[in-house]
Amino acid sequence: MGRGVRGPVRADLHCPLDAEGLERLALAAHMTGRDRESADAWTRAHHAWLSAGEIPRAVRCAFRLGLDLELSGEQARATGWMARGQRLLDTAGAPCAEEGYLQAREGLRSYFAGDFVLSRAVSEQALTIATRYADADLQNFSMVSIGEGLIELREERAGIRLLDEAMVAVTAGEVSPIVSGLAYCAVITACHEVFDLRRGREWNAEMSRWCANLHDQMPYRGVCLVHRVEVMRLHGDWADAMEEADRACRCLASVSHPVSADAAYYRLGELYRLRGEHDQAERAYRDGSATPAGRDWPCPCRRPGRRAPPSARSERARGRRPLRRTVLDEILVEAAGASGAEVRQGFTVEDLVIEGDTVTGIRGHSAAGSGATEYARVVIGADGIHSLVAKAVGAAAYAEKPKLQCTLALVPSFAVRARSAARVERLVGTAVPNRFRRPYGPGWALVGDSGYLKDFVTAQGIQDAFRDAELCSHALDLTFTGHRAFDDAMREYQETRDTKVMPMYESTAELATLDPPTPEMAWLLEAVSHSVPAMDGFARVAAGVTSPAEFFSPEYLGQVLVPATAD
Image 1 (cartoon, rainbow, N blue to C red):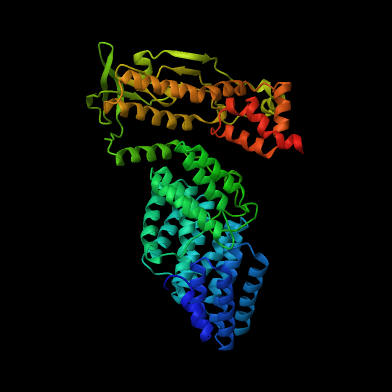
Image 2 (cartoon, one colour):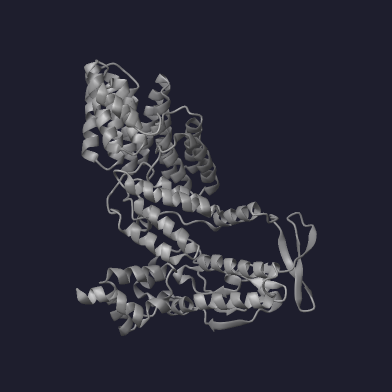
């Protein structure tokens, strides 16, 4: 296919292409992101096959064009082309594989409409036709639709198996590039949906190898590009994730229909934010907000019946399942092992080894029960709210606030409903302490909830833990390489941590009381709601990007509330 469509276009200008040549031109234009040229070539190929009396080939061109239009949001034109294809098949009367393609499209429409049972039934009929005519593209397309439907019906294992089988056909070169791109988008999105990130990483790697020979062609597009970035980020491949996010931004902003471009900019911004490059993060967020994100693009790799971007809103609207800690912990353990750490699964730490006032190791036992004692220069307690390390060393607490608990009596209308309802299982609630702990001492250190904990109402615990881990790692690296004394480096770790989180700690404690805002705060929030820059700034506070102290300062509010006053 070469590097684009220039060759076929030049040939078409000097000597009009025949029907097969026009199909190749349409495919080349599609693969290089030239959707208008592709649509024109599919149209001409359709008419060329009609003139030659080849009804099935004409119908297949109509299907290709209709599918591209449908996945680009042009529903009326797509329906028109599909209806034309059906009428041509009805007129011809002879059975052919193209009947299956039109059924596969109906399965796709049912899927986007949220009727997964009907989508599965129709797609299975299309798969039967594909098997009868040994049509690899139709078979792959149908399997992907069935697999996606099964996942939505909570038959995740069966659905993933079908998607895996479809991807095997892709990497083996058994299907066309367009169908390959659709299959990959579906698979990588499904892995993202069910949080099977290990499988997503495997298929990411396979697709990267497969695409290496395609040069500047675009076999897949849409939000699956964004999910590639997320899979890379969660597995610690930050350099590759940054490169892929930048490519996704350029790619999605340049195609005819910039689907999910804002989601790509959002992921790029998140990567910058996590690296502490806040100016670049701010720029990426603003670039994303400038994209035409309000459109409803039925991308093949989106969940059905939902709006696409902006990503933060659409992901919330799709009702995504939260990332289970078992999945996140597995990702972290795998990344630690890949970085050279020795990982011991099923090992229980029972106590610390303390010589004088210095921690020198740990005692514990394996899953089989055999005891072990290990020694280290520093024992790091990343063991949560009930930290064994913190208790053993008596880590001093400070800036403590009382635990906060909510009772049903605070919400009278709900309390009435609860009293009249039948309890079918135990009600579970909890409260957490609000406190800082000294995060280091001779031979030990604390990170995450073991060293700093606040009410979970602002949902920033994991973010805090990752930041603490990075600060602590940096301090220990300075110590082990001889650049700083242990106490000096770790004191800076503590001071930096406290400076960064104290404003949010105080804000969270106030918010967790569930008390109504003061009249002054109510007025301020009302003013913020009338200023887009102020709303953006408030959202950054909730996301942990901007400190509450910075946002609520007179200087900052004076700047962001000016537009509201001017209006």
